[in-house]
Length: 132
Image: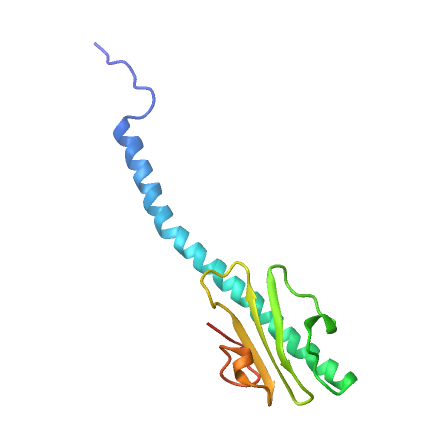
């Protein structure tokens, strides 16, 4: 006598598939979040470097550095905020952040010339973007 053919999956088979998908998701989601935060930091870094270039152009035209980003001919990436904290004829300091960065105090800084480094925290060397 022939046994009837089975249709579908057993509960154990479905449970094993769900557990495997859960394990893969537990591995993939943190990696994805870390990559997304790296891209946010890269956007802020890029915008700060563009501000540095535009500051030099502004200096050659006006003999001083711009004290506001709006004075520069620059397009800032969406959700990125750049603030020029100090600007004189011989130096400037700025900070930048992205609204997608989690945690308080997550920002990048850049200073140049004789600007006070505290206006560009966490920057620790003139002419280099530093992020925390």
